[in-house]
Image 1 (cartoon, rainbow, N blue to C red):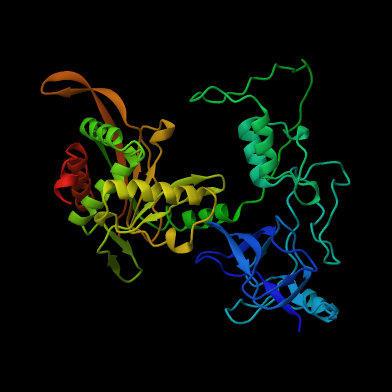
Image 2: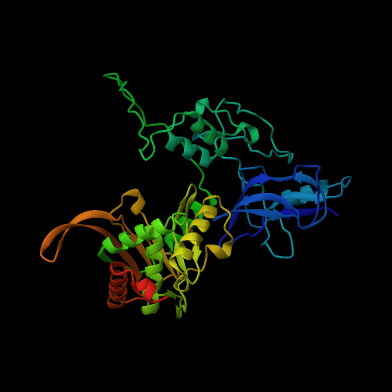
Length: 438
């Protein structure tokens, strides 16, 4: 008997998914539990498994299209089974709430995005349910995925010179990567600067509004937008800033990297460990707001913000207070690598008790971060850099770093946050404490 394949709930915060890649094509045999497609959720790219045996009879949405939870995206049935009634039912029935045991249907998904405004793009799956095989639009414009468009803009790639290899001739990430690889790489460590175009303004000519390109939000960016709305407005933030002498921490990091060059210990690794130690001394800060209660955590589960091409994700270092510096360094590198290729499991990026956001590697001296509800605080870390300071009555050059903690006033009072930051500063300025406390 033919059954619907619906968009599944693959992460706790997922409300819809984007079909990244079909692993089977129409007419292929499928078995229960076999990977059927790759789905881009709000946080990761995950495999969707078949829930029945049979043949993939019909694909209802194409690669690059999004669908809400519970919407029918394909049909599995016997090879010679008549599925016309089921197709008609899918088109006519209103949406149902998704469930773990029953499959449901939603209206057809939106069409694949266009790279220019005010122009309707052909859907990757027309009304007959068959994925399109067109290689160009009727108006000659290109189909470009949002990720590819962003990468091309950052790399200065002219998309007119790029041949798309995606569905319908769509330019996708791999096409831009190939184009970037074909250009001359800039000097190592040097920023990529675009040449300024020569002025071509003609006196007396009146120009209209600039042309533009609109890109649909990725699932990750939509979730970030929803969560930020529930944070900075409803959550009563206050901010505490401290400047820290990093000379001893920098010396310790250099010594450890000389002894263990394969570890490549970073300043952020040290900050994570020091944060965990300070949280254990100030459990009031290691807490979250739960509407009618405040939840206090026994261990420091620290979320570490990682920038990806789709947005920000915070993989969690569990029980960082119980782990050594070397363990934390190895774990965060492994988590960050999988985060950037969207391979984290939901339990690896949810449920932090405290978060850290570090923009020091971008040369940012100081900033404030937005709390990730329901956590009670987040620490914004700036760049470590040499600075003239007064030390024992003398002006000397020391490595310094500024940090700002954003606190939820419903959970943390000003004095409580200040005491935590004071302890954080003391440990970081005397990092041998980390080894004495093991």
